[in-house]
Length: 101
Image (tube, rainbow, N blue to C red):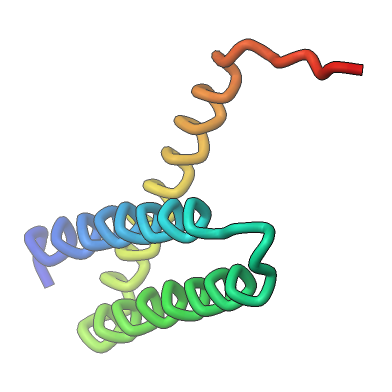
């Protein structure tokens, strides 16, 4: 295990979260309230696929070394928290809409 492996797995964690965020955005945009069953299938199926993808990559990282698996999870969580902060700042900058009524 060397620095190259560490950087690689940290980067894989970040890239995994980018792919998962894009997949989640696609799922949310695809959901239609009028089609309840189809929307539920998209939500549950998408979550299952995302968690399976994370689990498989985590198993590969753990097969090399537990330290690399922790670096993978660190990259994954760092990217997730960065996305949450970025989205919350975008939402805070939008003017609030006043409802009618």
